[in-house]
Length: 360
View 1: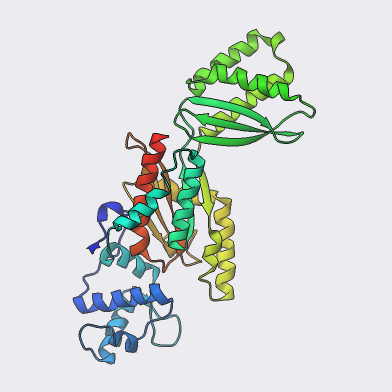
View 2 (view 1 turned 90 degrees about the vertical axis):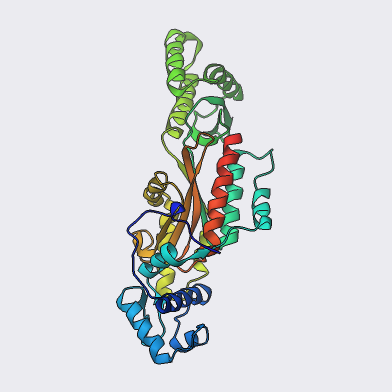
C-alpha cells in the first residue's frame, strides 16, 4: 500500500493540518466506514476498531476537535459523525492509501482495448462503460477535436429530409452529423458529392480543402447544380464545426440514483442528471483537466455543479503519441465513492485509451 502520489492529483488549495496519530487514525476510520456504509459513525463503533484502547469520552473529544477543524459534521442530533466535503478532500489528498492494480485487474481492463476491428467510437463507448461498471458511477469521456487531415467523408440519406455526414480523420477519429437536404434528392447525388469531396479532401487540412473547393465551385458553376453546392458546403461546415470543439460522451447516470436515501436528495440528483446530460455544464471542469498533469478530483461543494448533490468527479486526461493531452476520461459518483479503488482504475484506463487512440 502507498499514499496517493501528489503528481497525479490536482494541485489545488489542499487543507493542511498537523493531526497527531490518534486523530489521523480516528478520522481515517470514520471516512472508511462512511465510504462503506454511508451512515454516521459513532464513538462506540470506533472503540471496537481502534488499535489502542481509548475511552468513549476520549474518542468523542477527538471527534469534536475534528468537527471544529471542519473535517467532520454531525448530520443529526446523535453523536455520529460523517466527513465534510472539506474533510473528504483532506483525506484523499493527504491520508488516502492506494495500491497498484493487480496483474489480473490490468489484464481484464486491457481486454476492452484489444479488438482491432473496433472503431474509435466503440473504444470510447467500451472505456466509459467499463469505468461505469467497475465504479458503480456515471462514466464520461471527452473526445479529441477532429483536427488534422480528412481521410474520408460520406453522405448517407436517412430520410426524405435528412442525411448523415460521416467524417473519418487520418488519425482514425470518426464524427457523425445530421444535415437537412431538399426533398426528393436522388441517391446518385449523394454518391457524386461523396466522390467529389473525397477527391479533394484526402490528406489536406481544412483550410487547404476550403480554398480548393471554393475555387472550383466558382470556376465550375455550370457543372454543379444548386443542391450539390449546398451539400458540399454543408460537408465542409460539418468538418469545420467538429474541428473547433471536443465532444462529451456520458453513460450510467442512473447509477447516481442508487445511493439516494431522501426525497430532497432525489430531486437534487434529478437536477444534476439533467445538467450532466446537457453536457455543456461539465466543460469547464474538462478545461481544467486538459491543462493538468494528471488525475483531477473534484469533491462535493468544491465545484458548483456538484455542491448541492454530494457528488464528486475523478477524471484523468489522456495523451497522444506526442504526449499531448487530447481528451479526458473519468467518473461522476457520490462523495463517498471508493477513491482508493477508483483512482488507479481511472488513471490506468486513461493511459490505455491514449495508447489505443494513438494507434488508430
